[in-house]
Image (cartoon, rainbow, N blue to C red):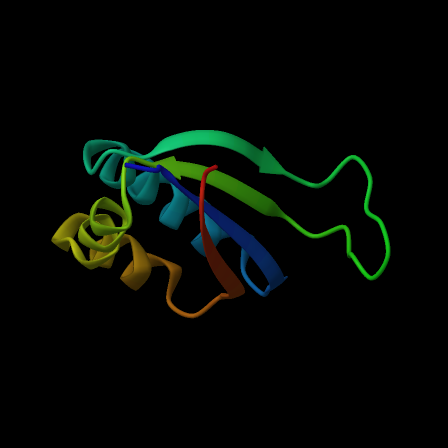
Length: 96
């Protein structure tokens, strides 16, 4: 079975303090659900139409694990702490 990579691209952040509160809760919640953080931060380079915005790459054992992590009570509490202060795009791709 293939693993799944989740790529999170932050389009905007309006409140860094809320983002920090979210991250403090989200990281352990996602790791508990099976997530492995591969990379996070501002890209060192972008090509074509890319933008230098905060990006996170997470490895999941399966799409089911990613869904379970996202819908779990602990991650949902993290989303409440984020309180809409970041606009993000999630992409999920299977590893080859």
